[in-house]
Length: 542
Image (tube, rainbow, N blue to C red; front, side, top):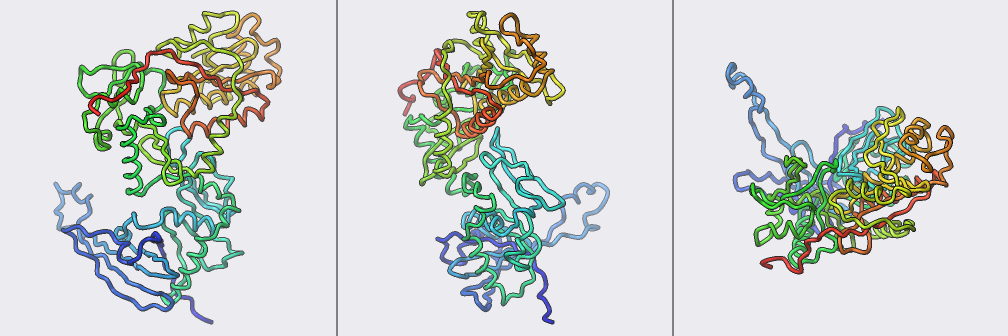
C-alpha cells in the first residue's frame, strides 16, 4: 500500500494575468528591511519555481511590558517568527503559496481579489457549508460571521443575495465530484485555504486542477451566482482611480450623482450641520454638498476630505456626532463598464446587468395617484403636523404615535399620516441618507405586517383613530387588498424626477414585492420641496 504524503496546509494566491515575472508578486522591501532569500527549485510539472524565505525576527511579546515593574525582561523567552512564499508558474499563471508569516511578503495589489471565494464556491458542496462571512449593505456596511458545527445548506444562513456581499465561504468539498483531492475543509476569500496530502512533485498537477476549478462557473448552479453582482473595491490603485474621478467631478461641479448622506441613522434629533471646526462657523439646516465645498480650503483634495470633519447638532446645540467629510459623500460613478458606488467611506463595484435590473425595478414601482402638499417645513414632524391640521377630514397624524405589542421587538410607528380611506403614508426627506431611506421602507413593511397579523396592534391603532377613520372590527384580520401603503419621499429642491441611493433601491424592490405578496397596494409618492436651496452656479475660487 502506497504511503500518503504528509498533510500540509496551503494558502494559495493567484497573481493577476498582467503579472509576468514571478518576483513581481512580492512587496517592495523597505530600506531598513532585509530582503527575503530566493531559492530556485526544480519541481516536476512546474515551469518556474522560487522559494522566498522571510528573515527570522526575534522580539519580546508586547505583553511582557505589563510585568515590567516586578519582573525582569530577561526572565522571558523571545518570540521568533519566520515564513516563506513559494512562487510557481503553472499553466501560464503565477501562484503564490504562503507559509507562516510569508503572507506578509505578497503584494495584495498583484493578486486576484476573490480568487479563493470563487474557487471555494466551485468546490464546496452547497449542502455541506460550515460558515460564511458577509457584509450587509441594507443599512450601513456591517460585517458578520455565521458559523455552524454541523453541515448546513446555503439557504440556512441569514443571507440576502441582493444586498449582502459574501466575503468568505467555508465548507466541505463536493466528494462526489472531487473525491479526496481537496481535503476535508476549504475556505476562500482572496486566497484559497485547504489542507491536503500532497508531495512537492504533485504540486504542478494540483495547481493545474485548481486553476481549472477557478475558471469553472459551476458556482452559478449552486446558488452562488449572486457573488458576481457586487463587491467592495479593495485594490488601492482602483480606489485611488475612483477617488480621482470623484474629485474631478466635484471640481468641475458635475454633481448630479454625488451628494451628502449621513454616515449614521438620524434618530430625528438632528437640526443642523457645520462644515468647519471653527467655533463660530455658520451652521446649516440641511446637508448640501456645495455648502461643504464652499467651506473647504482650495485646492480641494481627497486627503483634505478625509481630515475635515462634518458635525451635526441637536436642538440644544450639542454635537450628536462628528465624522470625516469623506464618509458623508455618496457617489455613483460609471467606471470600466461597471457602476461604482461610494457609500460611508467605501467603494463598491456593481455588475452592469444587475444594476440595470435594480434601476428598472425602481422606475416600475407604482406612482401614488393623489397629490400631497409641497414640503415647506424645517422638519418632517412639522410637515406631517401641517398636512394633518390643514385637512383633518382627510388625514390623521400618527407621526411618533408608536404602538408597543408583544409581537414586536420595539415600538412600531403605524405611519406618519393616515389618509381616508385606508392609506398608510410614511414620509421621509430624501436628501438625508440611504440609511434613512432603508429605515422608511423597513418601517413600512414592519407596520404593514403587524397590521395584518396582530390583533393587539390593530386594537391599539384603532384607539388612535376617530370617526370615519376607525376600523369597524379590529379583531378580524383585514383584507390587505383594501389597504394602501405609500412611501412618500420629499425630493431635493428644484428636482422633478425622484431618485434614491442604489442600495436603497434594492431594499425597496424587496419590500414592494413582500408587501404585494401580503396583498397590499404599494406606491411611491414624490413630494416637491420648496425649501431654500443653496445651489450656486459655480464654486468660489474654481
